[in-house]
Image (cartoon, rainbow over all chains, first blue to last red; front, side, top):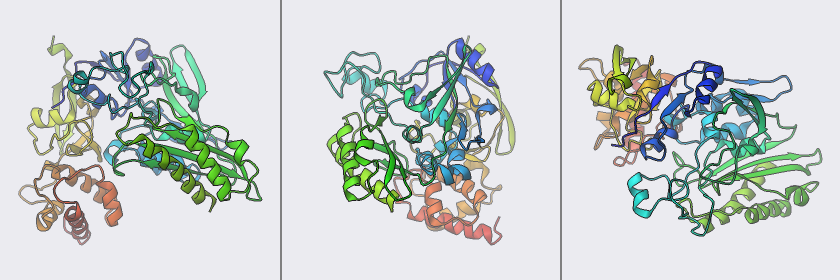
Length: 325
Length: 163
């Protein structure tokens, strides 16, 4: 049995109480489906957890007057995926939420928890005994990376399913602390350091995510490549949003890829190769090739990196063909 | 010192109200098995992968090995022990016996409570819906076919007026 180190749990009932508690130090826990296993593996040793489970104001989905979707960070993934408005208008977000882990995990895991999910690595998500036997790495207390031995920064894999989709849709996140609140694009929540990949300050709480309404004719998809479709984290995650003009030409296309390094990769340079062109085989092939060239899967996941890179191009091509059909 | 770290929580377990003092880092499965003697819920992988520890928390399947007991304070908890009515097995349990859907049995209690939550929500689920609902419950023995057959059969029995 895996035991946890002793800690205290505080259980605020409002956002104000939560940020006050957080200002005094502690680590946030919502569903706990990522944090508790990590505590059991001895990856973290917080003295105090600030539980968000009783903060009712963080839960719920609504749409704004301008048509944007607003999802409370405490909304469970099962509720997000089941919401009719989300399924109809932000279908790729519903898809990403419904392919996270398994039903009993989605019943408690939250959108905020998924957005703030810890990075994962074949050399990190192991027991203390296992890690100690090999020698500790950059993400814990060591000074070497077992994935890139010459590397100075941790490259643990960004493994959350919803953020690539949120970034592709152009979503923003609201962060609240005892000092005030700010709104930042979801894409800017992450930095390329797997040991500390969140740009949130330690006293900041993610309260909600706002997703703009896709333009008319826009279509989106989320593709998750993994070993076991029932429960696994992504070996590759690909979010695509495609907008087309009245004549069928591509007006905008976004491709965001996760499960590479510590932050999602927004594939750049797509406008130059796709905008104004018909979505034919040549355009689809060019987008897929651009995605392959821009993304570099690493040995941080126990599925071959070269295979994942080859499959990435295939999946982008298939997804675009489906969206264009 | 240890006493000061205990928190008193109230759980309604299979209909019985239980007040228990627990340290904050104790998981729900540990409280159920060791504190309340309800050993039907199994501690398998103990890190949220296998589903053997599945219980219903306010009617929804959750993994009790990664649920802190203090987080369940005030909730309704239903374990596999809550399925049978005295000596009379639940139709799901009877179907599992009929179909040989339990082999080593370690995953069975988790599978049963996941299936119960599904049938409460959806009395006539498709085979696909059953597969999805049970996708967090790993079984290394049966190959799943007999489990799916049993759940389909139990759903039919329940619809036809079995308990």
